[in-house]
Amino acid sequence: MRKRTIVILLTVILAIAALAGCGSQGAGDSNGAGSQETAGSESTGENTGKVRIGSKDFTENEIVAELYSLALEDAGYDVTRVFDISSSLIHQSIVSDEIDIYPEYTGTGLLSILQEDLITDPDEVYNEVKAKYEENFQLTWLDYAQANDGQGIFVSKEISDSLGIRTISDLQAHATEIRFASQGEFDERDDGIPGLTRVYGEFNWKSSKVYDNGLKYEVIEKGEADASPAYTTEGQLSQTDKFVLLEDDKQVWPPYNLAPVVRDNILADYPGIADILNKVSATLDTQTITDLNAKVDVEKQEYEDVAKEYWESIKGSL
Image 1 (cartoon, rainbow, N blue to C red):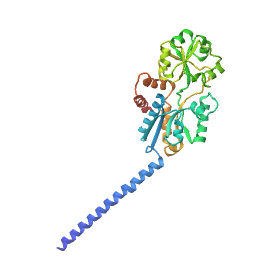
Image 2 (image 1 turned 180 degrees about the horizontal axis):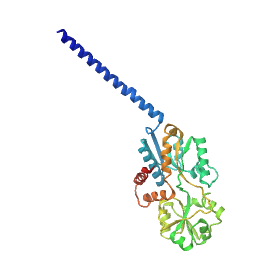
Image 3 (image 1 turned 30 degrees about the vertical axis):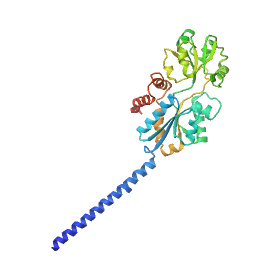
Image 4 (image 1 turned 90 degrees about the horizontal axis):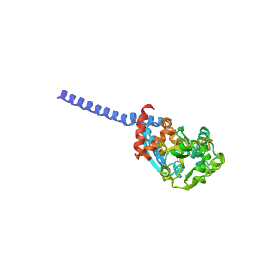
């Protein structure tokens, strides 16, 4: 009987010890290893954060913002998309802490936001906006892409070939033979006809009529006009059998290079974001952006699909 009692007591003691051991191990998992993982994530700030990516309300900005989103999601970030913000409101959106990142253009930052004088050298424009945004808004411009979505003028391929028009100088020389399809404000803006006239001379058009911006390619293709303002990465310009984008041979227009603008606190918390987005920007030149825009605006694909296809094609080399 005594021997049996001893065996029972030993069994109970061992069971209690085992339970205590399990309890201790569980506490270690939740307060030990778990705490170390959280602390490590906080100290590195990598791949555990939530970021809000914004875009302006047009095709190109949506595509690029979606590329940023896909790149960060693949790196482990939790991305919230806040797309289709009016161009006139998006700067205030990031300043007001409604978004963390969005694609911006160096020329827009210089002229529209900072309201500074025209600069035509891409590096000078970038350095100026980078310094002033940091000083005034606590925003960082990451590396700019070679993609330049600036002001331009295009003509029909037929007119380009028949009159030998390849540059703005050529256009000015043949202005009396050109029916100009204006968008109204282009005739008044400093980076429109007034700016061109100061450098190239008067543009004495054969005729000038105001058309809705969304109709300009149709108007030129139908032969109702010969030339029109454009932005240099518009998808329709990929149709080189129909349209010719003219060279700004005297460099009137500022560069509008694409770059991610990021809130400083986001880069402080998640410094790896800079490297990820800079690698995306390094793949984007003017022709690439124009071709991506064309898939949406000409071929009528969805911008999400276009961005995903492009991201899948480049991510293995980044």
